[in-house]
Length: 95
Image 1: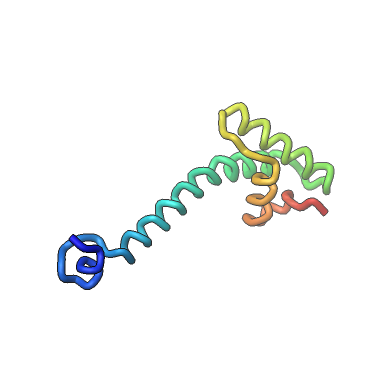
Image 2: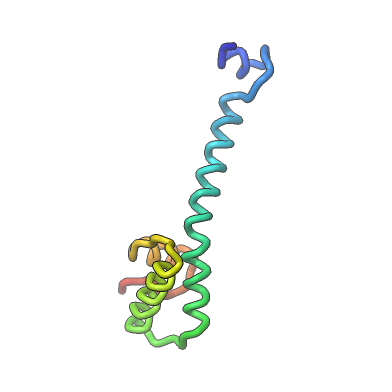
């Protein structure tokens, strides 16, 4: 069975476009599964602390990474900071 025949609708099967969409969705799911525990921990950490500025932000990032490590969830400092900035938590900034 030729991929071109499937793409043209001459033979049954999953088209290349559908396979590409499925692969993209699977990548998104993998990424979300990696990000979700980090964001949950960040949210829990931020809900327990008062806004203290940069020093508190550094402490929050360290606390989040430590908690993730205890749960065997690998998270690089840059990943925690990037996710916190992207999700607008306000404590992922290095400024």
